Length: 305
Image 1 (cartoon, rainbow, N blue to C red):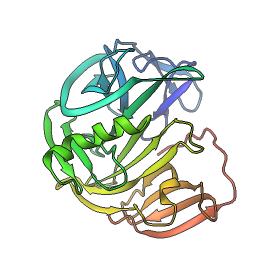
Image 2: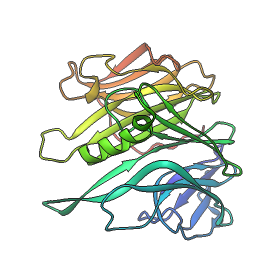
Image 3: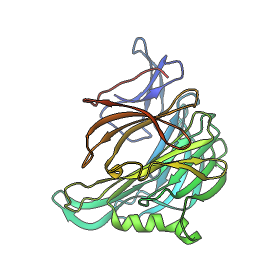
Image 4: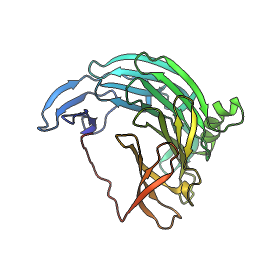
């Protein structure tokens, strides 16, 4: 089964059947203690291709960024934010996101496995109170800037669209990240998450370029953005030598909001290499403490919040 998550008290598991099926597939609600199926949430059509999504397990709402389902597309496409009630399969709302281009498309290149595709994936995050949906474009390298959209998660109203960071003109702020990186990289993925109190958004980006170079991966950096003002509070860009070869595995705020924990791998030319758990200031991203791990295994871990 594909496990989507747990409810707050850890008593229920939300899952889809294996092998992985589309995002709108039937979901099972399982008793975490016995594995018994308690409920079945219906399948529903998506009418498009999901690019990024987040699920709120208490309300059972799915929020997704969607593009048109065009397998022969030759460039990134316009994006809609949509919401569904997973218990009923009913679509709740949909909203265009002005100037945001994303998705997967044909590059015109052919590799050993056939036609090569490129992909741009914006970040998406739901505020801790479930009221606001943040969508982030941060496709550029290597400076802390991008565009932040805030959407009312209940009604789907677009609350704001604001650039953050240091672009030099309105055109560059809105369009340069999408245009430049769409031409240069085969894939850019943005990750976003709110801090514990919802006042700060943590955003990091990673890119891949499959053109025969020995190492296709590049880390584009992390920023802390104040949600109310779209002001950049801190960044890890150039924080250490070979920072752009870091591989971030996950980011988690402490429950009291005092710290931000980041688990990453120091790779490439870093010396020493290896896995590192860091405790950061959630606003400045300054490293306050770290612990190095000799080894790490990717495993399946499911724990109650």
